[in-house]
Length: 135
Length: 385
Image 1 (cartoon, each protein chain N blue to C red):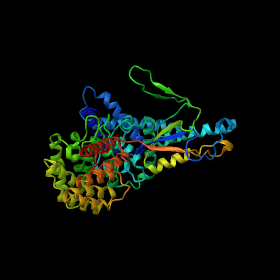
Image 2 (cartoon, one colour; image 1 turned 120 degrees about the vertical axis):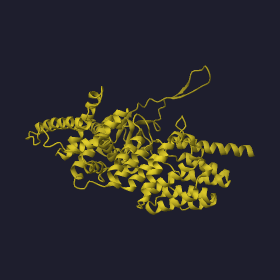
Image 3 (cartoon, rainbow over the protein chains, first blue to last red; image 1 turned 180 degrees about the horizontal axis):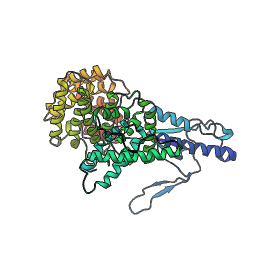
Image 4 (cartoon, chains in turn brown, purple; image 1 turned 90 degrees about the vertical axis):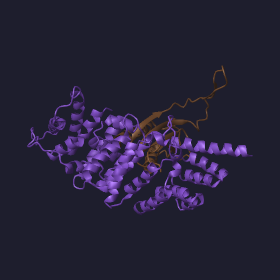
């Protein structure tokens, strides 16, 4: 039993396979994609592996402290969406292998021409609580 | 969670086994027992009835009839169960033991077996389990109902055995998180029940192991959640009552001469508990127990922990030699390597390895601990220059 974060990047990953922008898909292709995502989380709820998931707006901005009495500095938003996170899902599964398997399935969401988008998903294990027995 | 609540939950497996014995199907009977437990919590507020178990059996049976009726009505079928039970069956130890086996059925995944055990044997509500494991209640509910379906489909013919039950209880104990429900205490309670039912020295060994680790809990964590390593723990905080109980249970188990991995692990824990100061630890005997343990469970984790013990018993070079046989990918291996190199006096390498250990740490407390170790050595090295 371990929790993993599945991070969906807007266009992250080494090499895109089927990266036609979503606004170029047909309405039917879009609907199929949305339905796939809904079915995926519903299925994980059914298997008792779903913890949480949210989609994020691309309008991100960078913020940092700028010294005593001064307002924080902001930078952006940027047109470059390469590093932006589109959404995330938290799963609670029995093994690392299962987390990889599920991420692989999620990456097969249909895109343009109904073909899997093959998008790269980032899988990050949670830092859990320490176990009781260590020595 | 009150003492009454725990006592009430202690009756859950017996009540459930009576219902199943009377012919109720496992899944519906389990829902009915939950219903009865919830009703008891409000009905018993001004005092428990004179026969709590009888009360629960009656209420659970009625709840089962209601559930079975509505189920039957839904499926438009004749109700085949009698409204009144044929005879007032007394729960038998064998039936309750079989329930443990069922909930830890080998067909279940570890998380499903844990979920079902905590509910059907432990009497925890779905919400309590969900909170303890930090998942939504709906997710935990699905886990439990899937587990019940699996068990209902395949379980009753081949109900598993005591080994699988021990693994599940050990998982619960080792979860470590203590929130609303104290999972370690819950695991101990269920293992105690199992030990009474099973009469197996290995179950006694597991119980002793849990008690001995639980006894050290007050000294193991910092108030901020950080880890205090064994060498630095304030031993005056150890629960001597629990230690004495664990040692007595272990000795009785060992006397039966049926050794196993939990007894060997408990023996190691007992030797730690027995040392008034860290320097007094009998590392030579601990190494011997690790050698014994390897005969039952030759795992990389056991070999790693053995290397630590060898380092204390025979010096850092011997520990490093033992470590060389341990698989590179084992969690905490870098932490052990760092410790042994520090002991040997190679502070530069140790600092580097602590930093690597921090990067690979499987939990936050461990990461912070290893980062502190690296920082401590790096500061020392800066002062030396």
